[in-house]
Structure formats: structure tokens, C-alpha cells
Length: 294
Image (cartoon, rainbow, N blue to C red; front, side):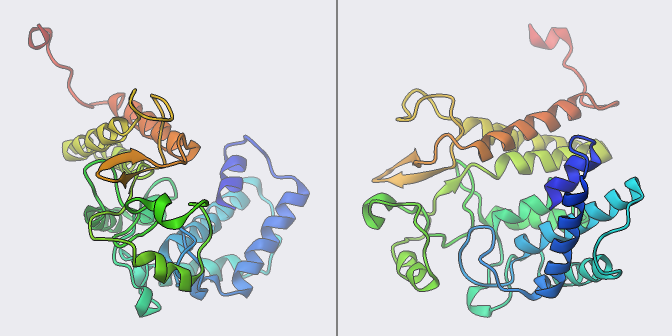
């Protein structure tokens, strides 16, 4: 929904009548199921709960659709108050959960999840104060190479393929997840390459808005981490690949089987895009004098 609205707002793919009708029906559906209280499997398709990372995209879509209706002059093809109800309920629920990912049900509570970075960028459904709280929580997930999706995440834990069997990407029920989680030892969570570039891009947005040098330094730091995670000549899949994640095979961190991953590639591209914008900002970082480069 959000992506379709962005394409229309940017005049890349204007809405047809059928698409407009479908979007309206989908918003009515989200209202009908009370998506703000719906237990889903979240960003990672695991653990039934009310996930902030699921509510954020719904709220972003509502706001984008409202902006699109204003721009085009179209009437939203849904119940008169659907968009307002969705925006109010989703905002209220998000503010009750954030900066955590899950608070309900308590047995699946999660105080930090790297998926929340997408609420900061590109969805931009949180203000700067909440965005920085989310960034602070992500320190819990940071590793030397990249970031855990969340702590105690057993997906692609140490020697994952040997423990799980022929299909490492299989879907797990909640009961099967409990068995998989028992395989994990503390500190052996996979480190995912999806997040550092998005954190970099978000700090870039903050720098471009404020000109604060600390944001630029953090943008540079997380871009450097993202670029350092690109594979080298020793990777079995080849060099210059953007991985999904690194996991422990015996005692060595290696890229998992989903290498290269387009999701990571586009995240890195967005990080580079925002860095280019930061470097071109009026009153931006000062160039080093020629004498310092000799």
C-alpha cells in the first residue's frame, strides 16, 4: 500500500481506477480486522503478537494515501471515516508499544528489534525523539559485523544448516520455534546486513535537516559498517556480494545461503544516496585543505 502510494505521489505510476478502488477496499479491510490490535507474525514471520514493525507500515500507508488524495483531488473510495480511524488507532497503539517491538502478549515481549529502523527510514512515521530512542535500543542488537534481528533470535544461529536440515528457509510454527530457539547459545545470533545501511540513511536525514555533525559522523560510521560487510574473495558465493546475514559456521562468521540479497543491495544503495545528499548539503562538511592531503 505504502509503496503503491509513493509511486503515484512521485508520478512514476499514476493510479488507475481499479488500483484506486483496490486501495480503498484494503484500507476498509484493515479497519474491519482492527489491524492495530491484530496478532500477526511480524516482520520476521515468527511469534504471534502485536508488532510495532507491522503497525508502522499500515500507518505510513494511511498517511501516504491521504497525501495522494489531497494531491489528486480524488475522493477516497472507502468509508468516510476509515482513514481517520486507522490513523488515530494505529498512532495510539504505536505510541503505547514504541520503542519496543512487542509488549502483547507478554510471553513474546521484545524490547528491541532491528525491524523498527524501517519506521524511521524510509517510512518516517515516528518523530525525531522517538526515532533516536529506537536508535538507542538498536545498540542491544549490534554486533561486530552487522546486527541481530533481535536478541535470542535462533534463525541462522551457529551451525544452522547442520541442525535444521535440508531446508534452512522452512517456515516454523510457534511450537517449532520453541524447539529451534533451544538450539541458540547467547551471542551466537546471526548478524544481518539489512540494518546498518538504513541506520546510516536515517542519520543522514537527521544531518540534512539539522546540520549537526554528530549525525553526520554516525551516518559515516554505519555506512562504513555496511560497506565492510560486502563479501571478499574468500566468500564461497563470490566477492562484492551484499549478504542477507553472517552466521557462525563452526567458529567462523560466513555469509548465509541468501547471498546476494536484493533487499540488502537496495538498502546499501539508499545509504549511498543519502550520503551523497549529505555531502552536497549547503553548509555541509568542510573539505580538507590540500596541505592536509599531502
